[in-house]
Amino acid sequence: MTRSNAREIAMQIVFSLKVGRFDPSEVLNSWLTEERFQELAEEMPLYDQFPEEKQEQYIRQVVLGTVSHGEELDRRISQYAVGWAFSRIPKMAVAIMKVAMFEVLYLSDVPTASAIDEAVEIAKGYEPPEVVSFLNGILGSFVRAEFPDAPPKPQRDMEAQPE
Image (tube, rainbow, N blue to C red; front, side, top):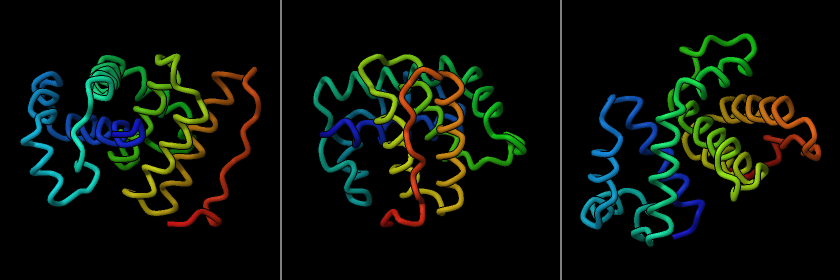
């Protein structure tokens, strides 16, 4: 399993926690079983391969970290979603942004550009282009404001990206 797949699985778990308000450890334990992956693989190829130990640890770290820093991450999203009430942002987009922001802020082994690029790519599979563009803008503003010394990253041209 690739880090990209593990990231998307972590994002799906974060989304499910937001929607259902379940205990994160229980959800992780129920999702991260070979049986659950076999069930999900019937509908989503993302689950064709069960995570190795390293990917499973990453998924757990991202999910538990995103949950434990949830209020902070929500505030940051609100801060950079200029002109938007947090409640109007699609919940899937929020989950994707929370995972990306958590990675940027708390996982030193994840390059900032990778976290943002992956978030945008994942969003393309779940959200319409205008939401993907909105999400990209929020994450770009976040990185520019929080890490002003980082080398500038060109904004992605959403029109030119294949779907």
